[in-house]
Amino acid sequence: MRRVYLAGPFFSPRQIKLVRTLEVILTSKGLEVYSPRKHQSKAPQSSMKWRRQTFASDVRALDSADMVFAVYNDEDSGTMWEIGHAWSMRKPILVFNSKEKRVNLMIAQSLYAYLNSVEKVKQYNFSKCPRIPYRGPII
Image 1 (cartoon, rainbow, N blue to C red):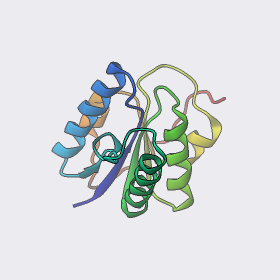
Image 2: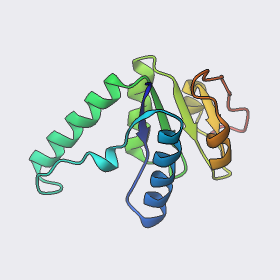
Image 3: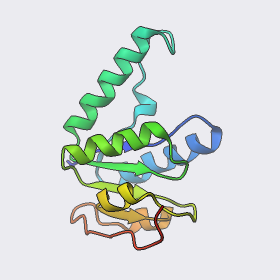
Image 4: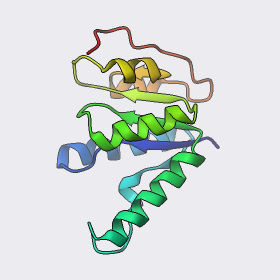
């Protein structure tokens, strides 16, 4: 079973709804999904212990993942860090962006596949992982 790290913000109800939807789709594709939303430290939130444990857990999961599925919609700084870390380890990065907007050059050039709708995620063949470059405007 391929392991995928689901990078994306989960701070607002809209973001949580999207991440939950993607968790379900990715799992239904036979992937073992690590979603940071589900793996927070039990220490008091924002405490130094919580920060250390959550960071360490997420980095371990990134390091052991076969690929990263990153939600670009809100250009979350944590997600951008996770994309950079994945790139440095030469992991395939699938970028999801359902908002019509330009993509940063560094993200556009580091991604393996660009998916711009939930429907395209459902249709994507995660076994073969075809390359789908981003061809839109960059910033």
